[in-house]
Length: 84
Image (cartoon, rainbow, N blue to C red; front, top):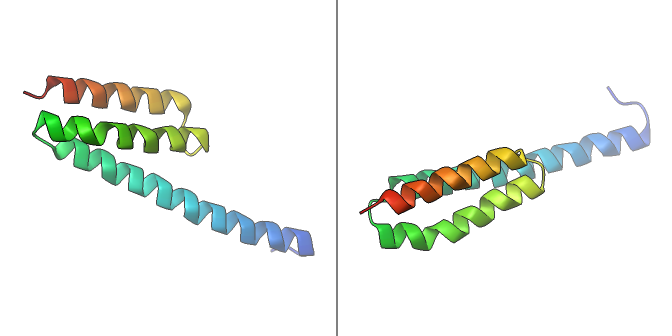
């Protein structure tokens, strides 16, 4: 375990950041699931910008890779456009 005061602080900070990242990631995944469960195009297109925003924030914070964020956004956009 850490022996120095700075190392102990770093452990505390890492834990806080890990929990915060987990919260952001989980909330974004839930929003994506809710969007994919949507059957009406009008409702789905209203939710799309908020989901895109959450995905962009994950990529900005390096929680997910920027290419994964782009792929997710592309697939969600195709899904919403395909709805009747």
